[in-house]
Length: 228
Image (tube, rainbow, N blue to C red; front, top):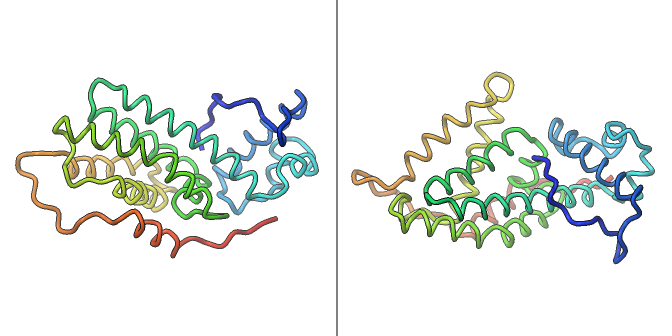
């Protein structure tokens, strides 16, 4: 999960956190981002506390369980993904904007095991995937429409293709993690060549999945939540 700074003032209930509490919260989030990024969501809140240099009780006061902490990180990442999509939508070249957006997402997933598990497997609860769908679908629709109207993206590409493409890139990254962690970029280029509109494009063999089918497929591989 790539770290960002564009976050609102932390709140607890309806009250802003005290400065020291807010600093502790951000310290915990930074540590969790690094720990989950390196070890995935099998890491514990004890691991996060050690990495943050705070007592585990401090972590539990801010985040009563791992699901709560994961959701807080995911909300930060969703905000950054939306900001990335907004930048892509203002790019003067619709195709380059579309590619830049997918490249940022692919790089984040390749570098962060925890983000891979949350986005691609919906680890810990179905809420992150539901939040991602609701928060990102309008941006994906706009990015795709813009690139198609410019004549650069194949007309058959739909928003439901994007999570499947990202899953493929994530799998390539995991497969080569110990040897060539950056090789996902090679397969990304192959995919881009396949979805770019060209005069000699062959028809696609099958239609895209419906959004409902994508959700069902992810539900089949989604592990159960493991609270601490």
